[in-house]
Amino acid sequence: MKYIDPHIHMVSRTTDDYQRMAEAGCVAVTEPAFWAGYDRSSAQGFYDYFRVLTSTEPQRAAQYGIDHYTWICINPKEAEDLSLARDVIEIIPEFLEKDTTLGVGEIGLNKNTRNELTILEEQIGIADKHDQLILVHTPHLEDKRKGTRITLDAIKRNGNIDPGRVLIDHVEEHTIRMVLEEGFWAGMTLYPNSKCTVQRAVDLIETYGTKRLWVNSAGDWGHSDPMTVPKTAMELKRRGHGPEVFDKISFRNPLTFLGQCKKFKIDDA
Ligand SMILES: [Zn+2]
Image (cartoon, rainbow, N blue to C red):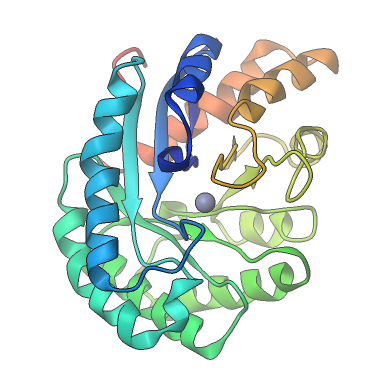
C-alpha cells in the first residue's frame, strides 16, 4: 500500500511521525502554509516560515524517503490584519517559484469577516496571475457552510479560475455536495475528535463515490493524528471495500489533482 497525505503540517511534527508515515506507505506529503498556533509579529516571520516550508522540510522528509511539497499564502486567521497581510502578499511570488511549491494555499476564511474576504480575493488574484493551483481552508463548525458558500462565490467572481484546479478542504456532510456539484475538488480532513472522523469519511465515500475526493490528516500542533490516512484504508477494508478504493482516494486522486502542477512528480507512480 502506498499513499499521499496531501494536507499535513509537518513543521509541527517530529521525525518519529515521518518514520511511522513512511512505514505505513506514505510516499509524498503536501504542506500548506497555515496559522502556526501563534500570531507572527511581522512579514519577516512569514519569510522564515516559507523558507522552512521550501527548504528545511523537503530535506527532513527525504531522510525517510518521503517527497515533500508545499503551498504558500497568508492564512485566513492572520489575514485579519490587512497591513501585515499585504506585506506578506508581497513576498509570496518569490516562494511560488520554488521547485517544490505547488500553488497558493491554504487560503480561505476563518470567521467570515470582511478583512478575511478582502485578502482571500487578493490571493485568488495572485493564483490567477501566476497560473497556480489553489488549496482552500474552510471554517470550522457553525461558520463552515456559510464560509464555504462565500469562498466558492469569490472564486467564481474572479472569472478566470477553473474549479478543477481548486481543492476545497475540510468538507463535511453539509458542504461536500455543493463543492462537488460545482466542479471543485473536495478534501476530507480526518481529526480524532473534531472535523471529520475516519468513520464519517468512509460514510461520505460510500455516499458520494471517489470522484474528485481525497482524505488528509492535517496533522498539526494541536490534537491530531498523522496516521488517520492509513487508518482510512483499515476502515474501508473492514467494511468490505477492495484495495482499489483507498488507492483511488489516497493515491490516484492526489496524483491527478496535484499533477496539474508540472513540478509534482512521484517516482513510483
Ligand atoms: Zn491545514
